[in-house]
Image (cartoon, rainbow, N blue to C red):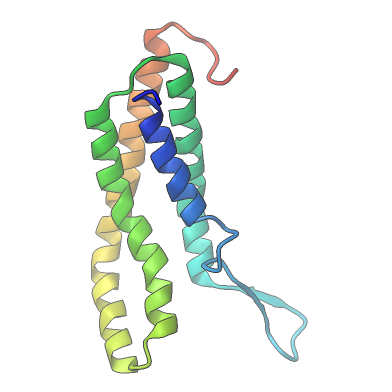
Length: 147
């Protein structure tokens, strides 16, 4: 396996784990109402999942076009991206699995304090990848992004 495939495979696993096909994304029907309700956690996670999908495709493109990927920038990108994904994914599990409502409220309050910083770090990571990606594509003089 080429070393340039490691970022692609890492983000492939992250996309699969946080995929809309997992139970994390939910749609429920409200009894007596003619409507479906989508969880706010699902909507928020979907907003975060789409960039992950695009980044995965970007790393795939880089692994096909170039023999190497800057592993330091990949590490920085992953370090900035992963905390929000972990909090998004496990916050639903905390709410679903904990019977102690006081502990749940405490954990949600603590998460709400740090969440804006996690979102900022996530989008900073996407900016790091975007700058790296466009720099690599322009470096080779390519006019197209996918073939």
